[in-house]
Image (cartoon, rainbow, N blue to C red; front, side, top):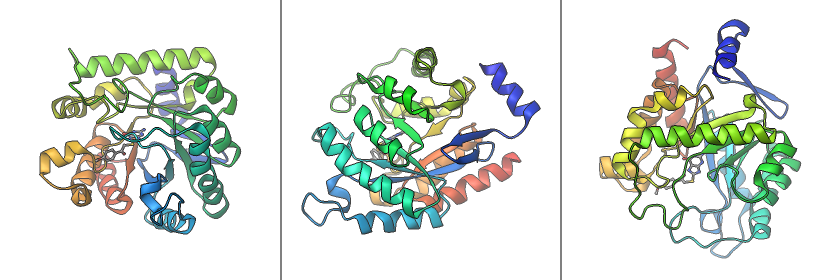
Length: 289
Ligand code: YH5
């Protein structure tokens, strides 16, 4: 797998990945803008999402240079309410459909729910981003059937309890081993290797020390030979280092994004698209890509 990818990169040329009808060159780092569609994000105070507000944010992120928009309707915060599959479909899919109609951007869905995956792809999503790595019953099967690329992320435990005393003997080796095993089961089930993106899952069942160590050795994750996506934007680890509240973490996010790209990541998942685009452009220019 690794050698095949290396052959493609150096002999065949540009490292393109197909998302629906769009080819994205992942030899150039790209930003994935985050769109939360949980009721606390764009609500009018009630439980209904304001579609206009959501689309205005997408418009801004696309204008700021986002290649992907990641639409998520399930909060993975500890203590967050679990939502039914139907409720998640109702939150996410109309937004996916509207983005697909109005913007020329790759739509990703941040979901672990097979019903949301299937319906989102029907309405124009071209990437399945699953923090549970397709381990929910039915998710892997649906992902295979849709044929779209998938992002497989490492998480220790489940969101509700994952930050209660996470433990690793060797965080880098364990995350790498988990991702390699997920690649094996996904390819065995019929997902094409060229449709796989990997993510070490910063903040998902990891202490500050685990996150920093994993970031320090991010090259070891990239060495698996798949495109790597990194999501550190505004996360608690940045607050722990800088002492800043979540609304003031854009600079720290962009700095970390540049570091991730220097270590080989190709997609950065971010709230502050403009800042992150500039940061990774500098990283890419210095690297010579
Ligand atoms: C990710 O890393 N993360 S949702 C806590 C925060 C800020 C942000 C309080 N989905 C990832 O963004 N998908 C999420 O500070 C993701 N990789 C991938 N692939 C959590 C989130 C966040 C949590």
